[in-house]
Image (cartoon, rainbow, N blue to C red; front, side, top):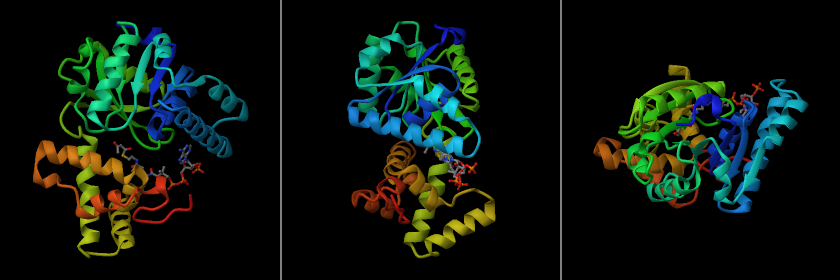
Amino acid sequence: MRGFEEIETVGVVGAGTMGNGIAQVAATAGYDVLLRDIESEYVENGLAEIDDSLSRLVANDTITENEKAETRARITGTTDLDRLAATDFVVEAAVEKMEIKRDIFSDLDGVVDDDVVLATNTSTLSITTIAAATDRAEQVVGLHFMNPVPVMKGVEVVTGEKTTGPVTDLAHAFAEALDKETWESDDKPGFVSNRILMPWINEGIRAFDEGVATKDDIDRGMKLGTNVPMGPLELADHIGLDICLDATETLHAELGDRYKPAYLLRRKVDAGDLGKKTGEGFYSYDR
Ligand code: CAA
């Protein structure tokens, strides 16, 4: 296995919100990063989001203009998966569809050196099933970042059925090198984070749909009552309603009816109202 000290170049697959956030924090930590997506438009959008995020960090004096330029210069966008042959550690952050992730891992397995660890940012899908698409299941691990990645401190390390101890240790060490703090979960549906978070969000949506309170009162109630930064409906819009629906459907399929997605969640996703990213969710946003 390629060890922590040998990691110089990090591959990130998927330039969406999570992928570009992971690329940014890896580059901030001093790694060279190859950020790959299937279309150049997605890569460009990801790089533009990184620019915006770094500018916010300059604006609040977290980094200097010079550090922003240095960080940005360490990130190279590409649509060519073969370029990830040059990487020492890979984090996949593509869409939450098992077949897509398995295809990516099978392709990565053929491209990346045999001793390189492949991590997935999946939020609910089985690490063991994703790993089985490769010939290096013992070197596949879950590395689940939280959104927005540059701001959120926590990263969940998820051990698949075959993940070895040194690979798990490497995942913790890598996350800590990105200035994150970790916790560990077994490869059970939703892990620790979404097994507990998604039912909370789902119940907030049901409470709204069933007229328990207005959406503002549900969010205010949870914020004032439990000191969380966002209520369930705001947080659903922040995460993306499509992602909440995918995660809740996985939990429902694996764990039964107590996780059945709220009717209103499915209806909003069907209507294309996915939260902040489309400008419309439970609340309206100026895009
Ligand atoms: N890049 C850089 N800086 C950012 C940023 C980004 N993408 N997003 C926010 N910030 C900075 C802002 O510039 C701001 O900095 P200053 O206070 O120094 O000016 C600070 O973070 C706070 O941001 P805002 O003022 O815009 O708004 P806020 O105070 O409401 O904080 C929030 C925003 C950090 C998102 C906060 O509301 C929060 O912590 N919400 C909960 C988020 C959460 O729970 N995330 C996890 C979701 S679960 C998940 O991701 C896993 C999954 O599998 C679904």
